[in-house]
Length: 334
Image (tube, rainbow, N blue to C red; front, side, top):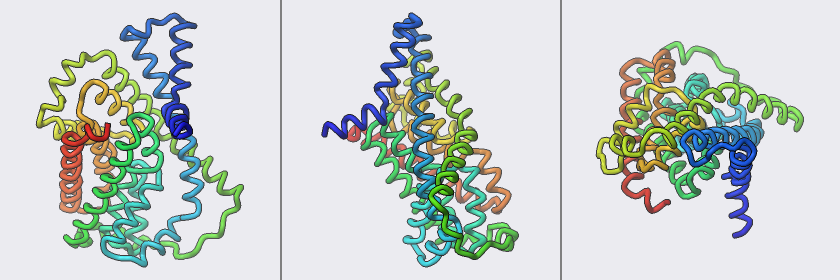
C-alpha cells in the first residue's frame, strides 16, 4: 500500500514538483501564492512541467511497444477477425497509438485501403485520439485511478459501439473510391534491433511533443485562468451540475476547438476544481479530441457528407450519454 501511494503521489501526481514550485515562487521569489496571480502562476508552471515530463516518458514507452506492431503486421492481425471482436481490436489498437485526431486519419485511410471493414477503422479513429495509455496515467495524476479507468472503459465502449453501428449501416459506399485504390504494402517488416526501437521511440517523443506543446501551454493557461481568475459563481452559473444543459453546452463548445487530450486535461482539471460536474468536463475533453473541426475537415476529404454527419451524430450522442452518466454517478468515483 505504501509503495502504491508513493508511486501515485510522487511519480504520477508529482507532489515533489508542486512543493518545489511552491518553494521557488513563494520562498525564493516572494510571490503571494494565496493571491490570484501567484496561484495561477503556480498552476501554470506545475501543470506544464508535470504534463511535459509524463508525456515524454509515456510516449517513449508506448512507442517502444508500438515498434513491435507496425501497420503491416497490425492489418494482418485484425484482418483475421470480424464483427464486434474486430471492432474491439480496432479500438484497442487506438489506445496504443498516441495520435491526435488529425494524425489518425492517414492510418484510417491505410487500414481501409488494406481491406479492413470501415466500421473497424472507425473504431480505431474514435479511440486513437480519445484514449491512450498516456492519458490513463495523466488522468490518474490529475483526478484518481477510478475516474481514469472509467474514462478509458467508456472511451473504448464508445469506439466499439460507433464502429459496430457504422458496420451495421453498411457505410462503405460513402467512402471516397480513391481510398480503396491507393495501393498498400503487403509485407512483413524486418525486425528492428533494440537500438532502432530506442531511436524510433525517441523520434516519436520529439515528433509528438513538437506537435502538442503549444496546445498544452494554451490548455494550461486556460486552466489557470479558470482555476484562479474567473469567479466560481460565473462558471457554475453556466456549467453547474444542476444545469441540465451543461453537458450539451460543453460538447458544443469543444467541437470547434482543436487540441490533443493532453492540452484539454488542465482545462478539465480546473473546471472540476471549480465545481463543474466530472461528466461535463469529460464531455468537453471528448468533443475536442474526437470531433474537432480540423479533423472533421480532413475526414470530409475521404468520406461523403452523409457518412461524416452519421459519424458525428453517433459519436456526439455517445459523448452526451457518457457525460450524463458521469454527472449522475461520478460522485461514486471521487
